[in-house]
Length: 413
Image (cartoon, rainbow, N blue to C red; front, side, top):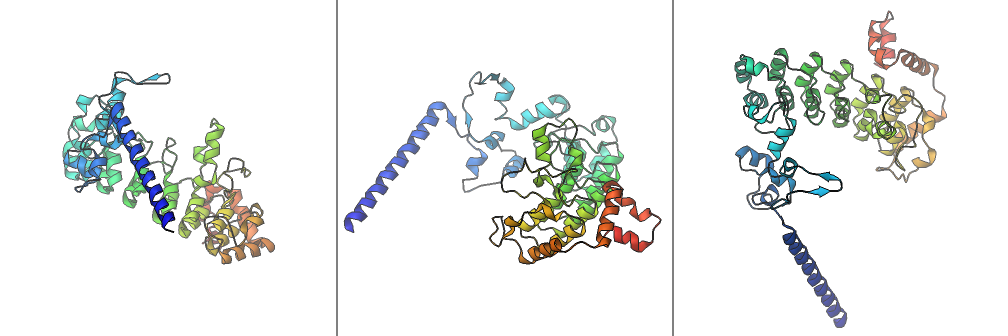
């Protein structure tokens, strides 16, 4: 036993010396290549005793933007060539001056005209009085849709987008009345409505929707306001989006000229608002989407095509609901709204399911009973009428010349 213990200590010592040697070699290699960590960088500061958030550093004026990029070369070589591309001097220096580089690349006006950011700063802090004062001048009224980098931001944005992000509803309303365009996008393809929804500002979202903002967001951004509201369970915001005609599927992202890889990603189940609301167990949002006409089988018109799915991923919404361990109410809603129960494979629903969670026994029992018993003619009739109307005309049901009980029946109320 003593010899074995001595042998183990010896092996640990040799491994430690090898580890220290390899680290020393890596450090010397970095020194030879000129790779050093910038002094005063955020990554270094966050390891120290006086660690602060990068935003606080930038607010206090002593944050080096290069710190957000991690390691950088000192000094940069005259030309950096990778493959066939040669990087310009502005691209090489965007590390040390990230904010200036973003301003140079994406602002709407030359740098000398972007120094005055009082309009954008007032929108950020919600200073309505300053906005009123500034927009009395023609020079500022002409800049109401200007994308610029403001005091605490890095991405060039319009004042309306900044106010919507912060949730200053009074400023959002004032800027719109002064002529701000509601659907302008930032450099990431985000509209003012989308960032208002992402930050949970219902008042700002309603003001933008009333002003005519597109409830589907921008085609230049993969996510949508409906998708985000469904994911975080904001049923109040989701109701407002649906009331103004938001698409509860992803059809507005699908165009005839879409390339197959792109269209296949957009028709996969993970981009479906109905799926994401079930994955996060948001039952109220799940029901709102179904009432608004979301496809209970799959979030795309036409036959279900699972060729582009990852191996082992659910092939339909019902399959996903069972795999994620959702309660029986989710299954009952899908059955009521006419989901095709034959799309779910029985062998994947055993007690030892390989999904993220085990299948809820009560939900599985509801599914099996619904599959074994024919549906009532009453339920089939309602599903048929709603499909004949189409999801874009379901909101017209209250105006039909029908008795109120029938209207409520068709609306699942």
